[in-house]
Amino acid sequence: MNQMRWTSRLSLLPVLLLAAGGCAWDTSEDAAVRPALACAGAFCDAPRGEGSPLPRRRGTIVSDGCFPDARALATLAAPATRQIVEEIVLLCLIPRGDGAIAPTDAAARDELRRVVASVQNAGIRAGGAPYRVSLGVSFTDETGVRFDGAQTAAQFADARVRGGWADALTSLLSGPNSLGADAIDLNVEAVPPGVRSDLTVFTEDLAGKLHAAPKRVAVNLFVPPSLRSPSDLPSGDAFNVPALGAVADRLRVMTLDYADRSTGPGPTIVPGWAVEAARFARRQTSAPLDVAVPLYGNDFGPSTTRGVSYLEAAGLASAASAPPSRGITDAITYVYSASDGVHTVWVDDARSLGRTLGAWQTEALGAEIGVVYFGLGAEDPSLFSTLAGRTPR
Amino acid sequence: MQRTLLAALPLVFVATPAFGAGRASVRLEGSVGASWSNVGLTAAKITEPAPETSRVYAPGARLALPRANFALITAGTSFVIGDRWVIPLLQTSLGGVAGPSPTVAGTFDGDPALVNLRGAFRTDLGILGFGVRGNHRRWSGGIRAVPTAVIVANVRATVPNGVGATELTMNTIYFGVRAEFEGCRRLDPVTRFCIVGAPSLFDGRPFNGFTFGFRMDLGL
Image (cartoon, one colour):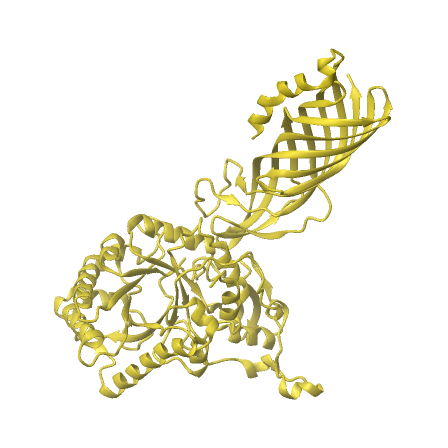
C-alpha cells in the first residue's frame, strides 16, 4: 500500500493532452464559441451537484510546487474554492545537506515572497478572508523530486545540519526578511524507522523556535497513514506520532496512493481506509488532524506508476479510445495499451470525491478532522464548485 | 403517552353506555389480510459475524437505508368489546421488498456503499393496541393504534474491500406506532371485509411511512 510517495507525482502536470486526440471541435454553428472536450463514458458524467450535504470541514489545498500557474490561481480566487478551503500549502522549500534551505538566492526568495502574497490575496479576490499560506518543506535530494530516505536520515542524524535547518527555517518564516507565510509543513518521506528520534528532536526544536517568534508560525507535519503499531507502512515507524502531535499544530495524515505497485492497479483513495488511518492517529494524539484526498490519479504501467491530472486522464482515454467506467468508490478507471504494454488508469473527479467526502459523515470521521486536497491544478475543473454546492455555508 | 392510554382504558369501558346497561359482549376476533407498505427505513447494523474484509468497522456502525416498498401478508387477533372497542392483542406481518427497488448509494462507517434491498424481508410485530369502531347497519369505520416492532433483514450492501469490493449483509429493528384507519363491510354477524390505511405515526422517525391493504375479520 501507501509508500509515502504522495508528492512528486505530478511533475508532468503541464502535459495536458487536450491536443492528443482528447480535444474535438464541434463544427455546428454555435460551436464556434463552444469548444468541446471529447469525452467518453464516465468522463461525460455531469458533476453530481445534488446529494446529501457534505459535512463542513477545515479545507487545505496542497500545491506540489512553488508557483501555482494562472489556472491554479484562478481556481483559488473562485468563491466556491474559498468557501471550503482556508489554507494553501506550497511545497517549495528544500533542505540541503549543509544545513541551508533552498531556495537560497535572493531573486528566488523575492519571487516566493510575491507568490505567498498573491496566494493570500486570492482569498480576498474570492470574496473572503486571505488564505493562510503554509510553506512546505520537502525533504528530497537536490533534484527536488526524489526522496532519498537514507541520505535524509543521515542528514537528520547530524545535529549541525538539523540545527542549521531549524535556524534557516526560523529566519525564512519569522526573520526580518520573512517570506510572509503563516505556517510551515514538514514533508518527510521514504525515511527508515531509525530516523524517528532525530525527526522528533528536529520538530520539537523547530516548533519551539517558530512558536516563540513575534508572529507565531504554525508547524504542521505530513504523516503516513499507518493503521497499527508497529506500522504497516515502510516509513510509518519513523514518526513518533504522540511526541510529534504534542509539539505540532496539525498532523496531516496523507491518505493517498492506497493502490500502488504492491497491490496492483486500484483507487488512489479508499474512504474507509482513510477513516481507519485517522482513527489510529487520533488514538495516539489529540493534535488537530487532517486526512487527504487526491486531486490527481495514477497511471499504472507495466514497470512504473505515475501521477496524472484529471484532464490528462480524460485526454488519454479519448486518445486511446478506452471506455472508462467507475469503481466501487465511483473513481474513474480504464485500461489502454501503450508501446510499453497495458496501462490501467484510476482517477477521481468531482463525483467520486463528492462520494468520498459524503461517506465521511461525522459519526464516522469527527467533524474536527480537516481535509487536505492534494495536487492543485490536477483536479477535475468542476470539483470545487461541486463540493461547495453541497457544503453548508 | 401510550402508557397513559392503557391506564385510562378501564375507565373508558366503564363509562360506555353498553357496559353501564350490562349489555356489553366480549369476543375474540381473528384477521388475515395483505398490504402494501412504503416506509423510510432506519439504519441497519451489520449481521454478525462480520465477513472478512480489510476494514475494522466501528462497533455499532450503521448503514443508512433508503425508502422501500414491501408486500406483506398479515394476521392477528383482537378482543372486541361491545362491538365498539377493539384491543388488538397480536398483529404480525411478513413480506418482502416489492416493486422497483434500485440499488442506491449509501454510506457505511466512512465507506461509500451500494445498498441493494432486493431479497430483503420484513417482519412486523404489533402487540396490545387500542381502537374504536362505529357501526352503521352493515358498514363500519374505525381507527386503532398499535405499537409495532419492525424487523428488516437480509439487506445487502456492497462496500470497498481493498482495491476490490465485498458484500455485507445487514439487518435492522426499530419500534413505532401504527395508526390504522379502516372501512368495513359486514358479511355475516362475525365476518367483515375491511380496507385499511395505516400511516406510521412513528417508525424510527415521525410519519415515516404508509401501509394500504385489506383485511378479513373472522369471529373466533
